Image (cartoon, rainbow, N blue to C red; front, side):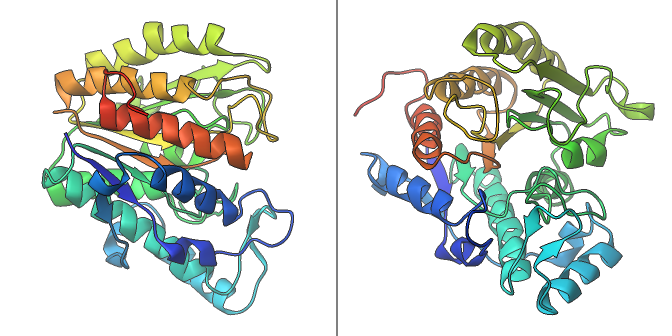
Length: 319
């Protein structure tokens, strides 16, 4: 079982300015942590490129894409919501985050790796059809899901979003679609204000959105049973052909943007539980996409816990 890793210095060019939590140092810390792992040389390296725009247009409107390009290249400092800060490079970097994510999909579907992690920025799960929000410009995971269906003929996809903030953009992309199961557990009430348990999809997608709101102060005591009793059984019933993870690490107890109290190794435990169900239904195929996580040390250590699980599976860590 090979594990793939996507990181490129181009993602550091998205400069959000002094004091912004979604900063280039996030990827530097992650890269350093993975580079120090004993399995680093065995990882399948994925390099980004620019995507065919038809894949971006499967999730975002053409007018939105053109507006984002015009505003960024025109020198704006932020898009739509005031928290989505940009610089002159941000349009190209955001497209390469998409492009790298699609190359990861190719690697998994071509069986060059069984699982993999996309260490990309800007993140994506708050990006809507025609609106940038929550540090996100293009919805990397949503675009990847449609790409897997349109390019690789995948039928059913499960998306598990464990970021501490609800993935409003991803939910809205697929809430009428019964071919994609979207599951989110997140602090609630909290930014962006969506993700109530009553939000379960619409039309043909009714029942294929599952929101698991968590109260401030929640820890493993609440999260692990949620995985065991709700998330894993739902995926097992759905029988996806691949599992995608919106991997935010801002539910860590040391993160400055949340009030959830998870430990570092919990992210490894989440990963192993998803790997177990992926082994049954999805040929083991899992792709993880970086979302949040803003305490640099906690972020790096939590990503390492997830990657250790990908590499070693259910076995013991070989430090």
